[in-house]
Image 1 (cartoon, one colour):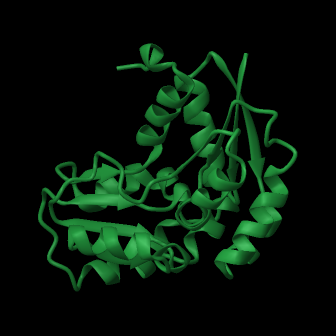
Image 2 (cartoon, helix red, strand yellow):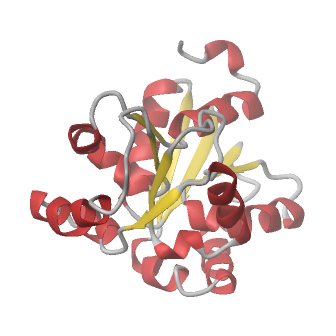
Length: 216
């Protein structure tokens, strides 16, 4: 059986691994969740690379695919891992998945994800508005995000924006996928909720030569 290892620093990686197991039942999914290093990985790209590499080292060369299910680490470290370990297949979360189109866009993310050229380029190309919700990932990890957080953190930021009914909301934080139903209530059912989960799963199929098994 093929093996896919999923790396992240929080609950977003668990959510993606769950989706992966649903859509690729022919593979074994291994979860590498570096909970205790989450804060340190946000500090600096070099720290993120070092700690991520330590977590991945036991799996490099021992699995068929390594998925970095974290936007910040994918943007800053994925190319490095591909160069250093050319015999290991790596994929990661994209800040510009194929489903994002040029229409009014709001990106929900964290400051650590925005601090790289890849993010700046994508946001500028889409003329996207960014809302950083830095305390949400930890609250979601701990199961402590409440309706009050939507009112105190998200809704005030939205009051200063003109939001078309047909806008798209890009979730550039894996944990935010746990809030999709709530986002639909806030932005309306005409808004388009976009994340990198489907795009990354499609890439996994392609990388492993399993495209004919992809659910439609």
